[in-house]
Amino acid sequence: MPGTGEAATIEADAFEACCIRHQLDHLDGLLFLDRVPGALSLHIELHSCDA
Image 1 (spheres, one colour):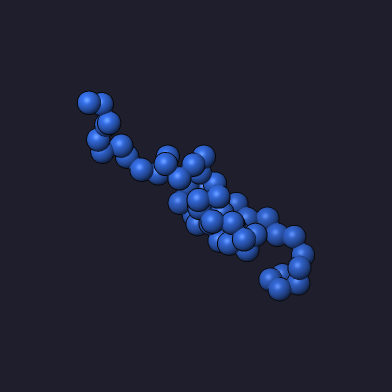
Image 2 (cartoon, helix red, strand yellow):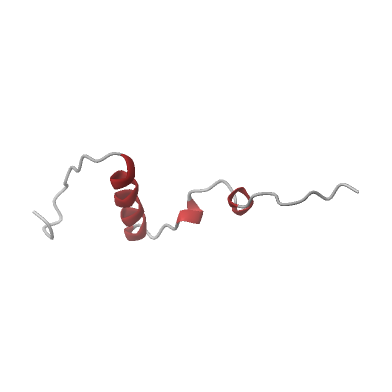
């Protein structure tokens, strides 16, 4: 029963599961960036520094 504090089981997969995980992370104070290995892993290397 929502709001009672009792444990609940939700079965989901694919996009729905990602959305639920995202919202549960917010309740735990986590952000997407807390789950990636590093901020640079989000960026595509556009150029190299080879001279």
